Image (tube, rainbow, N blue to C red):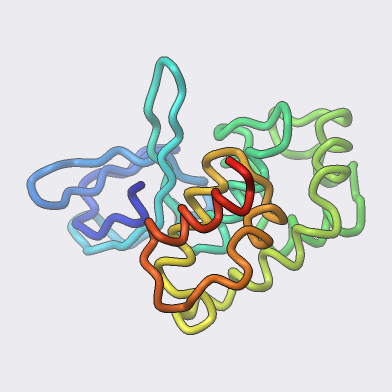
Length: 194
């Protein structure tokens, strides 16, 4: 999995950036709010990434913070919410505001996101309330001490396999802090019975 990309900002459009690193240009879909925060072309940037794999496409998405990336992953875990709708949500709301809207069960506010009607907004609230705030508060630290790189990579891999955040946390509970990502994944999958 590609955890982040560090390189030169080569191009910006309405919903995509190109980052050149090592002679290769990567196209990353991004929220418009993040695009507005990027520096001028030619500047060096570091973006957290998520590789979305479908039968007919591979799409790379970029985020300025792990909090946004984790929120994106949680949103795309909801039935009927794909990457484009999740990016639209991050374009309309700051992460803390979206978490507050879900926690408050504010269906009207969530329905303002392009591509989300009242049914999908209700589903987002139903599936994410309660666990969303806790997950994002722990991710917002962005400190290696609170989440070693191997643990973070293992969490992301398990989430991308379709496990819920709760299953992921339970599966990794009790693992040694000095374990590699591969060993953590093996440990977690064994505990999950996969």
